[in-house]
Image (cartoon, rainbow, N blue to C red):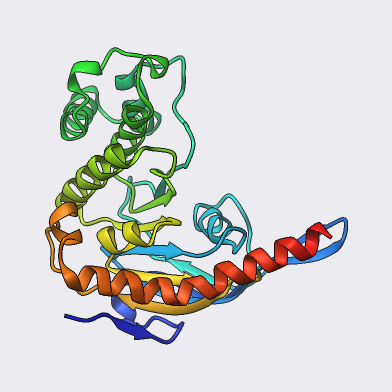
Length: 278
């Protein structure tokens, strides 16, 4: 079983796309003049796709996610996101760092989005209870974030995001600060919950292993300015089990293949950083 390396423009049936990005660029005005963070990004992501983005530091990955979340405006090009069903939020975002409200309990954090939408108490209790159970947090419902480990806090963030039932889930390196054992456990939990919901996910990571483990499709980005270098279709069937998948020889072959494309961009990014430091 082998991966398909495609041109930087993804294609799918027009009626099936959830996110469509055409010639999107983002330029920041700085003291030293215009800075192009993203340059001519083209994407067509179908509904239910687990879409991964990998690239060197500073390539614009987070900027792209923030544009999708409505936290940044793009400078040129077009962005089309299919409207969600009535009453459902367009997106929820899981950040790299700790984004929980420290004065709220686990339950209150997980229920926050549902309460803001004014949903009935019974529905909130059922939904939050379900996702706290799925993330192994039922016994900690009345704990506060400072009483939890880093991995447990990220589980609360995941439970909160899924409980809010967004149309699109945006994840910005949510496991990067965790040790390898916790990272594997959370990847397993995320895969199990995603199998239930099949939400459209856009997930940023620096880890090629993580991208192959979780994703349906991977975009490899260039060093600054951020462009789509290649697309990789991940051929592994679902459901997936992290350690079993990683034991397969074709998994290692695909990781090696992707790293071959990414390595040149990481080296270019380092050269750019060294040049700016002089």
